Length: 255
Image (cartoon, rainbow, N blue to C red; front, side, top):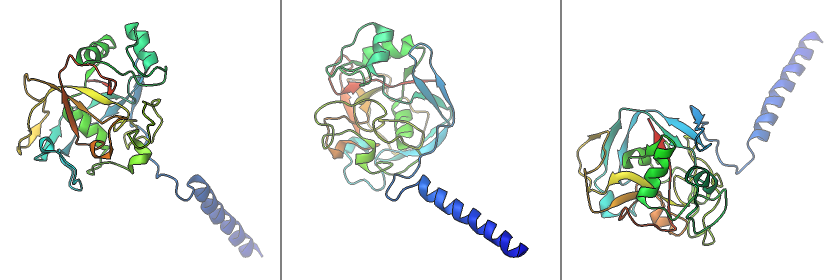
């Protein structure tokens, strides 16, 4: 009787583990994403920033991607020797209003990302909160979330784009985060990067910063207005740095 009692208890424990595991992940639910390794709140804008460790990745056209443009090729190895902080979300309008005192956005709402900003607007905001703009390489590295694929998960789970945006931006944190705990790295708004636009080469690169000057800046991520072909980790957009548009937003970084 004593042995069978112990076996019964063990059976209950095993059943409990199985049941609790099933309850924790329902059939069809998205796979869990890793929690950010380290975060901090910037007191100047009240936003959460995530620490991204140094590492290496393949920058440019993904191995599984048949929709790449010419300026996403050739893919090449990039090594980032320094980790960096990155905004967990796009800069929402409430934070921009708090820091700058104005709100240029076409689509209004405190939780919506600020839009209709130029490169100068984006750089000035980041400077005011003791941060900076991301390099192109940093953006792609963070956007991939340690995945070599064009997208780290099914598009509808991670991005606001033309098929589901209903013609507007959406509140930050509205879709699934990537493995680094970052939201809207694809979709919702294009994000200004620090770099001038330049063509890729096949050479390996270490901490690339792009050309010293150029005719246009580079934006990353894709927007609510784009179709699926533009919502990819390696997709690039160029525009004059003085231009403002309702597809352009801000995400800051720091050292």
